Amino acid sequence: MAIKTGEYLNSKDVYIDYPFEEVMFRRMKKNGAIYKKFYGEQESSELIHYHNRLYNEALLSGNEITQEEYENR
Image 1 (cartoon, rainbow, N blue to C red):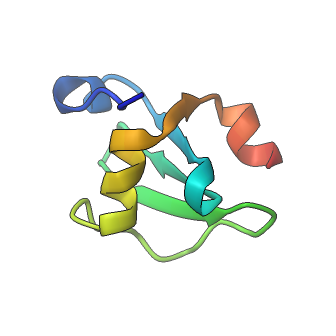
Image 2 (image 1 turned 60 degrees about the vertical axis):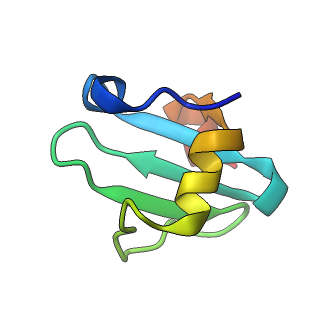
């Protein structure tokens, strides 16, 4: 199911799981920063651009998850 965008992304920190590619994203409310984390790995220290193909696929086909789920996968 698609993740809500627009103002919704600015309402809170949003955590997205995209199991098809075994990747998750974290988008921060404060500054819009987007981080990527592959299953079983550490979160990337490089910021992801909002035009990133994988991030946009996750928005369209991924699931919103909790912070705990993001941190523990």
